[in-house]
Image 1 (cartoon, rainbow, N blue to C red):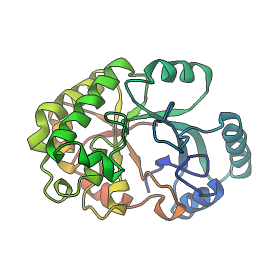
Image 2: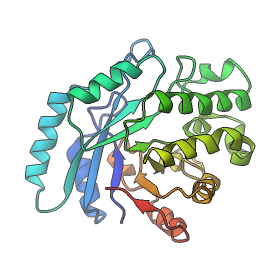
Image 3: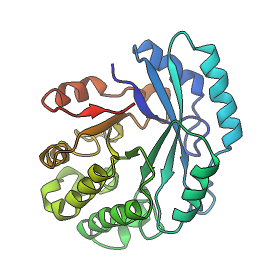
Image 4: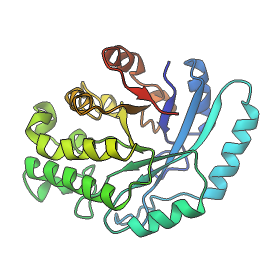
Length: 254
């Protein structure tokens, strides 16, 4: 079983899960490691939400669990940094002043709004918004590339009411290829994120077609994550991902 390198717990604003439950699930699945990647979206613009966490509280908790389970599983300190044009400088400062084993860079905001919210989709047609999301992702990476992995590349598709059932990545290849080229050139891994399956889709983020694009350009490094916000989803569909990855020669980073 692959290790799960994208897991959330009560330290993330959108999860109530006890970290201990995630760890026990990982051990039960036979994983040799797990990484907690709590949300750090600095200056999150959604009213009434604070998408940050207390680093000291988090770090102390992980140290406690590392000691408790030292003979059963490796536990890594991670963070999922929200990449947004308006917080790049603060992200840079944050990483300078906090110690993590692993950093995911994820784009969650386009025009100051998360595609998770239905109101986002009222602004324009779906194709244009997906294109805007992809171009925003590349621009943010160019400004801030100090991450280990690019998280859920086509995350926006999860919430595209019409497009998610008729999604053809080739229609967005002019925007996808530059992202893949950039992460390849900067030794940033491509995350295979299984969170889509929880949303009822039959492909991960990114879509299998994007795996082929990545292979085509000589992309090598990947990482696997469930994006679990509850212990029930730790390791979700990793058996399927293992089956699909068998035809590729990607290398999982550690």
